[in-house]
Image (cartoon, rainbow, N blue to C red; front, side, top):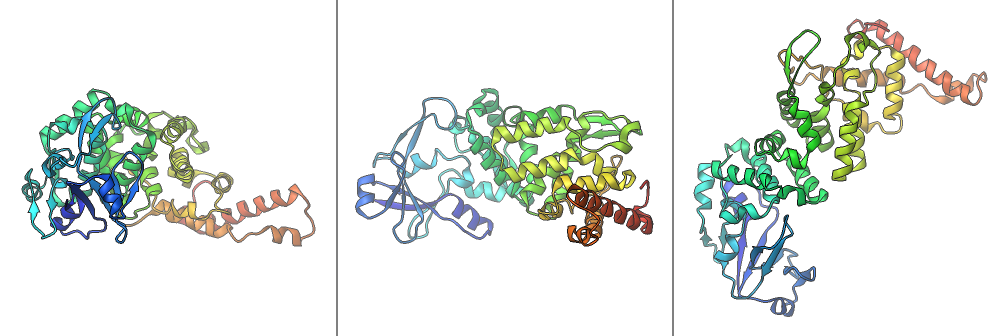
Length: 415
């Protein structure tokens, strides 16, 4: 029996990254032998074992043969005769197919170290096309390593397009799609993740709502300026990712421009509030991929209220208080914190100010004016009972916000 360190631990060490998890492959052993050594088996049919002391994962060397559709349509061979090379050749990228023995010797059968030096993400073999998850994984690796200059080899991108063309992505489970997307959103440059999926036509199968969003890639604003939605979205995701690692913020800010695929009359803009049309797409996306409830809430808030927030300076205080009520910032102030990075976007030049989140700061300032106006203050007057207390509380908040806006010229436009 021989044991090798494989995959991400070696790749990350060669790149100078800290190593958090280590995975091992075992050659020349069987499930029975592993159990006798007191390894704990994970699952009944899949030979992955947990080390009794280190709790690290040890997998028997295996081969795979495509037998159906999707990423689960495989027949596995875990025979003790399977070699290290046979195990490594089934891996996705050359940079993930490097092994190391117990003496520290590197076994690099597919030139992974060379590709690391050249900054190339390249598939190991033609079997790459058999697993549709690899489309998402490669997109995620591109997003993770793009700041180091990594790019996808043209032949690998061709195979990714072939996987999409064969409609293999349709067999992926919602949980797996969101799991990989969540990881993609956690990377240093998550916009690259979606950019790659767009390039290989994966959005059509994985995110048809976003693909529909991208199909109408441009519109003319009220001043007849040409605006590219795709460019706006990717640039905003890139910008916000430099400010926060919060996935709720990153994903919702990325999709906030979705409302611009629907036209709105300039005459009605002063009375604009919650836009329902784009929310049908958002809810469809969330339900299909089983996205967490709170993430859904933030998506709906940022996308549904996008145009209202962009025109908040000309909205009346009544609607602004209504907005705070609907968002429920009284009980869930963290939701307001997730809006703190919002800006007023210049669609002609997309001129983002350096760390000057004007819209977000404005919302926080407005809320701070009215958040301490309490029900108790209304009850103390002994003039209100029942629902009248709620109405009076609402009136006091609107009046306080009006006064504040009058005293702050920068925020004073239509009260």
